[in-house]
Length: 66
Ligand SMILES: [Zn+2]
Image (cartoon, rainbow, N blue to C red; front, side, top):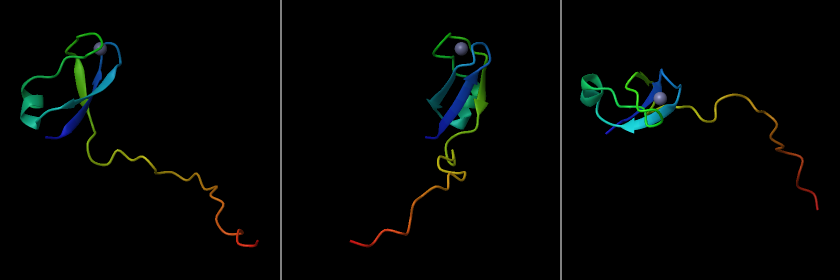
């Protein structure tokens, strides 16, 4: 069962819902924060990239003398 990400258009709260695509198409989940059903499905699930981007300050090399 895939995990979908929703964002509430009313209060802006974003949440994740574990549901099927068929269920999503049928009825939108209510926002857990404000209870509104004005929610919008976002992209989630597979490649929510955590670790992209260059924070290239890894100090590799240079060590090795004692
Ligand atoms: Zn809301």
